[in-house]
Length: 473
Image (cartoon, rainbow, N blue to C red):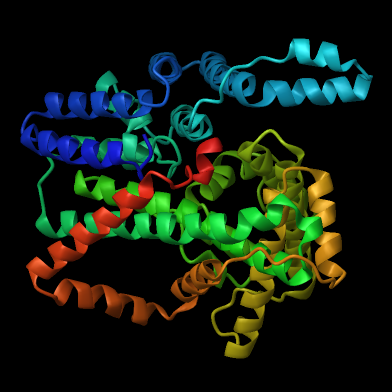
């Protein structure tokens, strides 16, 4: 079920009520949350819950085996088994058809032969997220960073915890499992803040991201060659904010629901369009994935050690694979490759010039200029991310850069949503905090009216809202 559905609005209160009723019994509360998480996932596809269970069983026993047998060869074999099992399933469901298409193109195989080699399996929702989450556990065990848990229920809940199961944030076992050891205490303030974050996330998703998609982005990307250069430029900005508020909204809801259940989930976004460089952008955007790629891939390749050219190579490889992680399409690969090349070039430039684009003491004008440049680089790359084919991408850029007239299918509501999105992102933080504090200062009955009104609006719009963009990854 999606967070912006009526189903979830009925599901969540029941889960909250039963969970806090069972809070005194550790086994029952963990077992209940585990059942609720599997029910949440099976609302999409009952059979695919078996994939999560299989990954859970594989990594649970692989971790215990690494603890029991201290021989390096055995530990390495168990880690390889975990990697092969998890990444093998991911490859079959997500990349197999893409692989077949490209092999067929290289060897000139007939269309009929290619189609015959395809499978028709649906991509399991969130498979990339929970795969990376379980792999982080076995890799950390292998590196002696954490000890494996012997409690299967707790480990299974770590893998399948429903707020962040299908689109993150990607949580580490070292962060989540210790929280299961503590007896939960219900705190009014924490639950209130969690609800506020849920409502903010729904607002970002339904009232900004979905409106931008329907009224601005989708009409332009449907036929970019027929649109004016102005419409294409606005749609570029619109999609940059659509994908941001869609994913950031999901993360806000996940973190807020976790907080209402007494859990602390890691922040996933930190105002990325205020970044002063692409390196800084990736420290603010999809933070749980960025840190995962850094800790388990970039550092394994050598990280920043060695020459600046080796560092640039490592960055290029990491971002190329990061682009492929998002989906089995050349647009994602090209998007990752562009980011990798720009990050690598930035690292080489810094090495030879000593100029740090992210230093805190830079003049305000310089900082603003760097923010503008970085935002346009990110927004331009997202056009690659959004384009459904290389032909669409080529048509988009050639038409936008030619400054030609054409159709302008953008509705007034789209401009309003874009202005709201930009204001929320670039308004000074004290202003945003003052707005939140003003809400908490109003009487409780007024806060309740705001919440009730918001829920009614979201319920009315939820039936026609688009699915979260990152569900496809």
